[in-house]
Amino acid sequence: MKTGYELLLPQGMTDYFEVIEVEEIDKIIILHLEEKSLSPSEVPGRSFISKGFYPSVDIHDFPIRDKGCILRVRRRRWQDKRTGDPYMRDWDVIADGTRLTREFVAFLKALSR
Image (cartoon, rainbow, N blue to C red; front, side):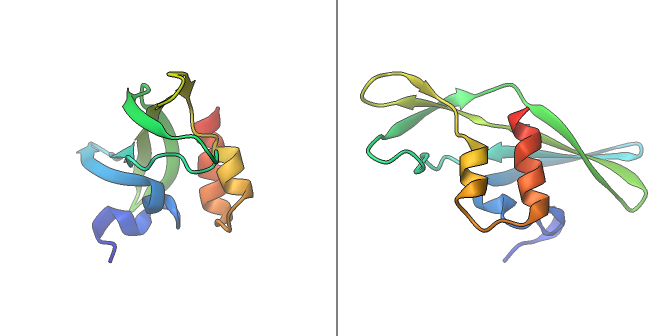
C-alpha cells in the first residue's frame, strides 16, 4: 500500500523508483527519488550489476497545495557482468513495451533528456 507522497506520483513510478527523502523549502516541495536496484530486464540474455548513480535530474511537476514540486531523480549506473560495458536503462523501450499512464510516460521522456 502506498503512503504519503508516493500517492502523488505518476502511476507506475514506484515500480522503478523509491522516495528516499522529502524536503519542504519555503514554497517548494522536493521529492528525492532513486531508481530501485532492479537489474534491467529489457535486454534478454544479459545480466547487470549496479555501479552507483548518475547525477540527479530535476523535473518540475504539478504544484501541490500551492507549493512548487520538484522530482529530484537519481538513475542507476549499470554494468554488464560479462563484458564490463556500461549500460543505461532505455526508458523509451520500457514505455513502449508496457501499459503505462500518459503521465508516467511523460515523466520517463523527461528523464531521457
